[in-house]
Length: 431
Ligand code: SF4
Image 1 (cartoon, protein in one colour):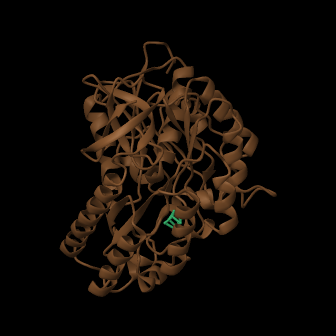
Image 2: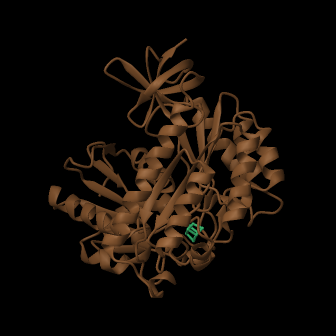
């Protein structure tokens, strides 16, 4: 397979922000090799599906997209990357995948594919991820014009009872702070003004590096000229100790928006989930952030229908969410993942019960979101505009609430008087 400019590649990315980053890094390798990118629903010479296994639905969709790619062009070379590739490499070969590349070796994706095609074989480039170093991927741009994800960490060793991620993403690996700074600088030079620091378990950043903490990573980005905003991906409450929160509040670009993973507001469920905090510790962390960043938006993940979750525990969980006062919640019904501790627990709930609890939790999330946004009406917010639609510009406030206003310039921050709610966001007038 020669990489002539007429060769095309199409990407489909499922799952989290880390996967988006990994896809972008692989895409740039293809572009460097002379490929042209086309949409996934077009006929392409190469399809890359960056897969996800965090829920049964993510896994199913990953397989569907691989099959869809081959239907669109049966002659195409198919690459399966990411978490399903890591978990089920041999099964994917059965789907006709030419190259299975797991959660390492993504930087060599083009060379590995060329080799597999030249040798007329199916290649599995999947490593044991329990003892490997950080794979130094890099990106120079991203979809959208103003916000970029910067990956700073890989892997998780917490082994929460329901989660399959540690098995497929492997051990904790942190990116060198200097390398984070370099990437942030090149993205800032390309015009990105907002950086989102992402990782599989961000709170573990630096544990494998000598004398390095998450704050060092944030400062690497904060020191880059031209970066106005820094956001952090999902954090665990245990990291939000008084010292950390105080130090974070001294970094002017850090946005008042934190995703603090909760999963359940019931202590007994948290214990069964093997989460390492109780509701009181979570609340204390939330209050510290709310105090240091007044009016900040706290968002979270809430899992409903964990094995054995009683009506009382579920009610406790929702009451706790009301008490914290989240700006939004991502609600997930518990999804059985073979090989995890929770999969073998008694008291598995029916699909209907999980769905009805999810509906109730989503209704609460909507109510909390509305009340959080209503409190912003009448305030003035700096909005970074990212896209335009029918004469209106759309961007985000520091709290990561979508704001729509007429006349906003893409890539620029403007002050907006918030006048009302629109959809899941806000609407306002540039002042
Ligand atoms: S902290 Fe728990 S839920 Fe998060 S990735 Fe690690 S094992 Fe999964």
